[in-house]
Length: 66
Image (tube, rainbow, N blue to C red; front, side):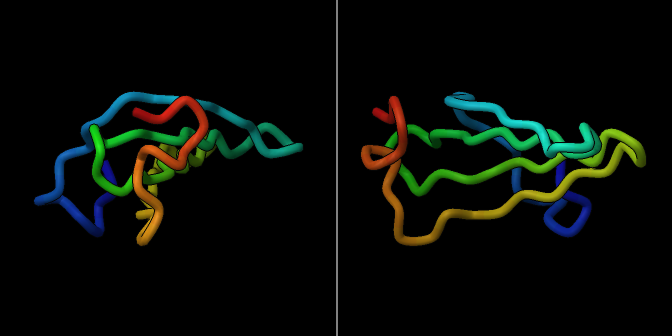
């Protein structure tokens, strides 16, 4: 969960995951069932997360999206 958006539930189907070169950040691309997708960025050292909405990119245009 992104602490800056506590009222927005993290829902969706994970489509792809990538790690930063140093292994600190884990990035997961999510499909929100036809809505715009988002990227969940997890700082694995601090245990903090951020969600980045992909405004204007419908899930159908994401890799393996619905």
